[in-house]
Length: 268
Image (cartoon, rainbow, N blue to C red; front, side):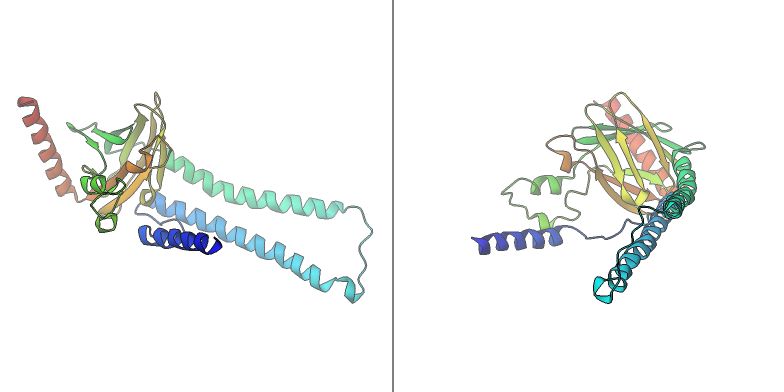
């Protein structure tokens, strides 16, 4: 019985490594704010490492250097006011030193003034709707058909043969590079969350409430994310794809989308 359980666990581990890219740290991203977020994260990480080294180093040294076998006797004092002041003041100073850059970054993350492009993002069970406020462009974005065909249990399509399985969509969000894009995020039904790690954005989509965020991508490319709030049975099947393109390519895409909308309006 134990051998069977071990085999199952080993299979799960191998399946996990085959279907996902393991990462031990957050991505640096492709925006200035994502890089700043990464820098703050690493600063706090190394501060915690330093604290751990000092605290556990002192504990380990005390255990070995003051053990009973060497003739040391336990202290007979009840408390030390000086020690209490020191271990209170030092953490407060560390927290304040970390809070200042973190608070500054949080304010920058919320400052969407001067946006060059505004997009309303509405979440549905289980897809996204994008409405470009400055252009006559709007569309739904759903799980791409190859992933849709491969996801049912017993499907003839092999999921391992599908590119970006469960992380691709039929209509990606297209934005120009080096442009400040404001997103106004809401939901039409239940709680969702718009999450793209490389843009350092994770914003809740709440019915009846509009949350705003922004980004300025510095590099052309395709960046993928997912809904990050449990929203129902198909929660795992509503990915997000953001395509960052050059300005002229974006203008050509907008023209194509506008022409398609006009043809549809003329021939519904």
